[in-house]
Image 1 (cartoon, rainbow, N blue to C red):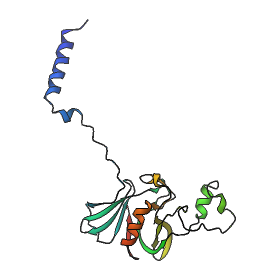
Image 2 (cartoon, rainbow, N blue to C red):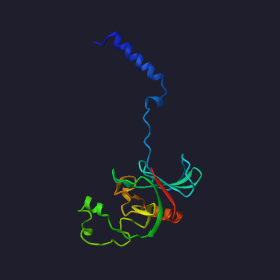
Image 3 (cartoon, helix red, strand yellow):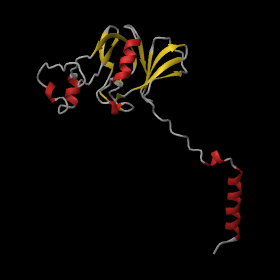
Length: 190
């Protein structure tokens, strides 16, 4: 049996809800849609023009073009525990780079890297190479970190944490970035 109190409380709640603006009823925030296409954007922090900023949690790399302005590219980043953070300098650049996994990569996943076990094989550059069309080599204090900003032959990985620590880009995007950045470019990964 429905009581008078139940009717009054239901009516009061409905009346109160009708006074709220419609967006307040559905206050769910629209999800931010990941867009890997390069575009000019404003940035909050003040980085010097010519620097690169990488925000792995949002899967974006920013090449700073002017005060608080940058070109934003979508990227893929390292799996948890394998990601690079900190500051580095681009000290080498390669077109269609060769590649060999590190010993740590081979040890972590011997099945994936079987053709590299117990030999010195280096995969030649080209469309089948995991480093893609271009590679920017990151150094700290003159020492190679073995982390790279590079292209990929797996475009579906952009926007995900899938690599062994490197920052990967679509091949056409890394070619564009490669042409823009000189040796000595500072890269900050937060």
